[in-house]
Length: 540
Image (cartoon, rainbow, N blue to C red; front, side, top):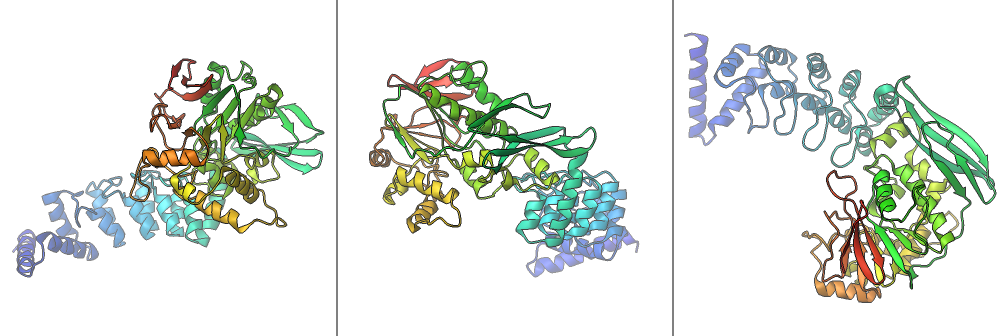
């Protein structure tokens, strides 16, 4: 009997036996194929390939012969299957062959696949790559192989984690040490030429130390440019790094007035979540005459409100912060005011959660061995500015807050004054400061999914957070002595009113192409939707 007839008869007899015992024919076939792989039965595998094809899915469509061979660590069968034309980049059940190597630490097979042209940075629907998987499991040998083919360690998946984040999260010490070194080496020449800064810290009562982080990809050079300044009350200087053409005015910190309610304000302009979209903001404010052609304050005695989330996602967060800082100081000279509110992404930054930080900043800080938190410590100008942001303000009976104040916060009997005061105390505390227990209770409630930073119940609903009812909205506004609530956080395609004009969401995404960027204007007791081209539309 020739080999082919033997295999057919064998599979038929086994499958019949298992069927009589209640097992499926497919499970029998899968088990048989695994034995063929383990025993290097390439003749038997050849017959299967001719019948079904080399990439035919098996094991409930979770694997192919190639990925099974990787899991079983049989490199000779892997070579055989590659010779038979197995697709080395094929994704089955969201996993590629290289990803299976990463999960199972099959470094020798990973090297073979990479030598034959597999995509080292291929990612799946969760934006996971092979080096992310290898880092998650601390599989150092495979990490080293992937690094030899310049796998991108800065790539972030759908939850915002990169390779080092996973290695640190799961305490993979050897992987952490290697990845830190690898990321510094990868940074040199692997990222386009870019810079960030200036970042300015206080080095004395009247002295400032400034620096830029710079990547020169042409010369594969990652470095810092530094300069020190003397300051009395303020100092003006032009950038000392050639690629930055801006001018800066730095002020000594001033004691903030703890005011969270403003009345008799003739006009108010509010902007949603910006996430580093500096250029789009300039266009919106310029065309709506909030700033002049030189990007200076042009809104007179009006108030400008940033609803939170200046940080994360975009690659011009630093430029955005310096611009808002400038307006914050300029506005009072004309009788105006700038209010910058805390969003959930400011909370993340202050708690050293950098999942959503743009790759540029991760690249520069890791490459230069600078802790990202250092850029926004209390001793830096921007860090001190960040800690001055408020949770909420009320202007002319309009309540501004990042995600919305929910009925839950009313039930906890939390006032806006408490929110602003306690968050200021917690984020500016020193070892000598006494923080009351009430402050930590309020903080815990506020950072929940029903608090003013993460709440979505005015726009969407979930099992944990139901959509708010009209009567609840009325109770919230009555409790906080407001008539309208303006919120951000949850994206909307256009600014419209909700709940009979009681809630106005303004987070029109500035980063999305094809969506008109918008702001909200209150003037002469009317509320308008303002487009980035300067056109306006009456809302109420």
